[in-house]
Length: 140
Image 1 (cartoon, one colour):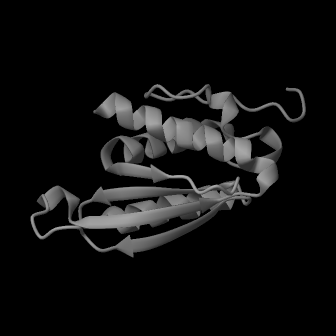
Image 2 (cartoon, rainbow, N blue to C red; image 1 turned 45 degrees about the vertical axis):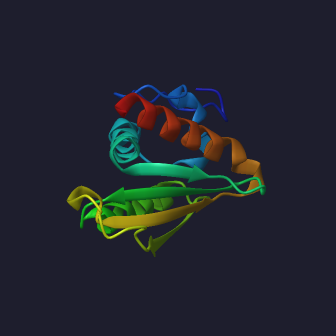
């Protein structure tokens, strides 16, 4: 493998070429575990993503997620696991108030997942956001 090239990751949902996600020099997740991690993100995006907010600053994005009572724990576990292997990611999870009292039981929890990366890794964040959009659209 050429230094700086990305490892291939095969995922069940359409999205950007997996090689666009995390460069080899930035990810310590074992190759065999990478498809499982991608599948976890794809499932989260397909089931819980409600909106993507992108501030003007490169290297930052906010995902608005909704789901059941286990959503916060699920997102925190995934964010912690991703930070452990790709230390340039910073994830901040914030509970958000629900917009109405008439919320489906499946969407009782609303979260903001703020994601920040160094500007030099903005391409990785862009690929993650593109994957989120495509997984969400495929599930709709």
